[in-house]
Image (cartoon, rainbow, N blue to C red; front, side, top):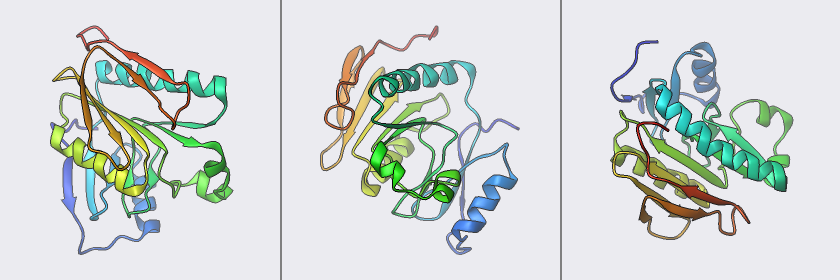
Length: 197
């Protein structure tokens, strides 16, 4: 796969890909990381580098460990594409869905792109990510029903906290994050990002 300096956006709103056509496009091109905005814009992204991938795994790993202890839901990696209620198809860097909501899906829905908004999402800004584009993505999550989201901004040493019905809160690193009522008991200590994650 040729690395893209930034995501490539294809405005295919006039084409009107059906959900099945979009699914087949993704399945037939497994080396491409493809998302679709609520407005129907296809977004092609390159894979992340080693530092970003390591940070993503470390942050998502903390979520996994909390969920393993509480067994309150399901944790998903950045490879999972969610079919959001507002029409977007998005892949958070890490996501969590409360157990009863996940169990309400049919087996077929679970195997394909789950038609559900996660309760919680994490996004980690890599070197090639435009901050404004990620902030728009976080707003799209909230508009789809995501209840809590964290956007980690390596370049500015900050984290943006997105809550349903509230303006984003920006904190400088280091900081302590709480899962609040969405992820009860989950606490994440976040240090400043360095070149040695």
